[in-house]
Figure (cartoon, rainbow, N blue to C red):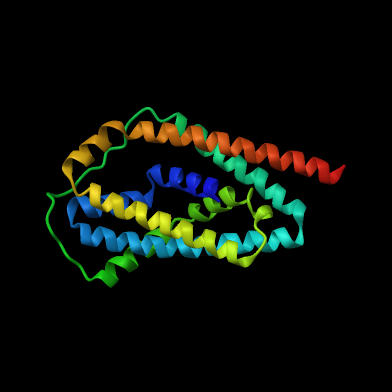
Length: 211
């Protein structure tokens, strides 16, 4: 379980649509709007994680071989992402389009916008499938499944709330603009290692099952 949470955290560290949405909200509007967006993103992650984990659980209970094929495919995707991240040599620039000012929108509106941003990113389902494929065989009951889903959503919400807090400060934005490529490189190493381990485990199990 802790490995799943660690890999999910590394995935969160690598900038994506959710990160840029929350950080730009914090940089150009207000922490309040950004935190509301983070909560909306958390609801989206809760939806994707539930869909993926229960889907994998059903596959695990009906066909072991398919599960390990998914492990190999998921490991391949993570390894591919890792290679691409290791090739990053330039920093992504977080541009603030306008001076920071306190703009407050209705919280429900900001939560909905964060939710839609997350749901529009179909790569989330591929990522969760890749990360979780190697662990479903060791999860024995629905209580453990629900616990993992809730922890993934909670971890993600807390991470983006911290992003909202820190990126409302210019010194953090400037530091990020200078050094964010190293975050990508670190995430690439973790993804490549974890993806390779999934491929190895999946292939060796498939060979054992088919011989």
